[in-house]
Image: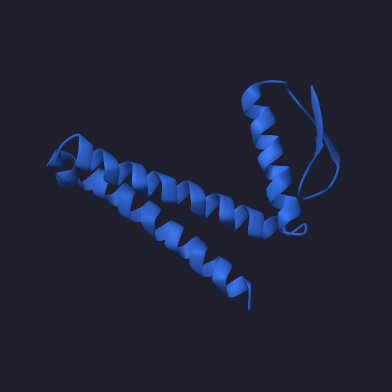
Length: 98
């Protein structure tokens, strides 16, 4: 079992001991400390990164598999939505530095 802290409340938290939870806890603590305790910036960076990875994965899948995916409306909608949310997170992060 891993003992860490909640990045929002700073209360101790126990995590089950598996590799995924260890990596998530470690990355959260590193990001939280790198941002000097700014939990909102950590959230925006994480969310923007996830949406960016999803967008890149969708575009790579279209390029590698076939162009048929580019004609499916739901696939296009999800790709555009994730790209929009990634850009929005980047804009929010840039504005918060001012």
